[in-house]
Image (spheres, rainbow, N blue to C red):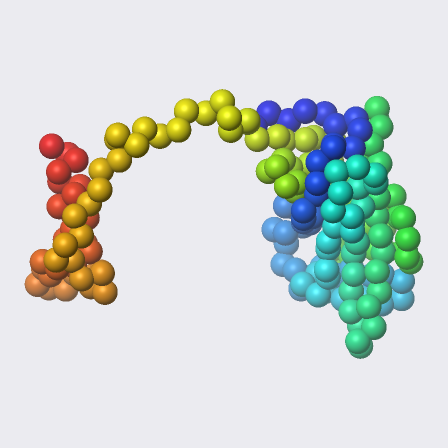
Length: 183
């Protein structure tokens, strides 16, 4: 997929949001998120889309639970000619603590944008929109080329071979079919 620069909100339904790959490669117990005066390790943070619509603001929420109390900060993705900005849209200030450094999440998202997934399979990373190719242009696999295997006499509960070769096992059937393909 070749990305296109998104200068406006895509008219697509968002279905999920995920932390950046850079953050997911870190040990999550060494990363903490602060929402207001509460803090929790990354594995205790909920990151989710707020509005599942194809128009309006593209928004997501960062939530943590501390002692049964949920604290949340909402963020809006704003598009413009100079790229994407992440703006606090509700709730207290939120921060990320990585490697002993505390950074506001709006700043962190600028350099490490979250991945936003859409219902049509598209992916938004910062201002880059990756859209899958249209499927109606693809030629389906020809049904005439599909060969049905004869499973008669095969015990589907016997997958593995032992010292002796099981004539009724799945491995024997697939080996026979593979040899048939080889010619």
